[in-house]
Length: 111
Image (tube, rainbow, N blue to C red; front, side, top):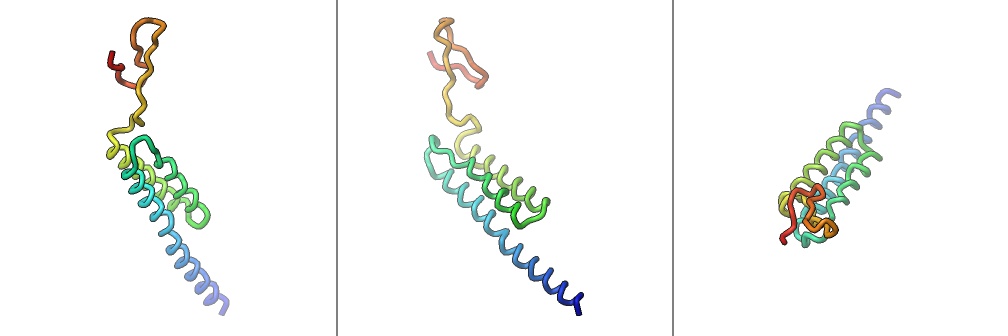
């Protein structure tokens, strides 16, 4: 009799966990859509960290890793729609030396 109760309880937990997986997936989709629709000066992509953080509370390590990978993929989609991963920050010119300096951002400013 105890074995049946244990099996029923495990099955019930499994079903409720599967229902909770929808929450981080909805968050990933919603944040991605809103971030793509907003101007490039507004960055909502960092909010994607919420999805795996919530998944930890009810999911396994594999499920959390999967949700994390989906969040990283969503961040890549956002970067592709917004013109790359540059974050739209202009390079800084070093006016003391008299010539523009790249400072590691990959392009020189227009002079």
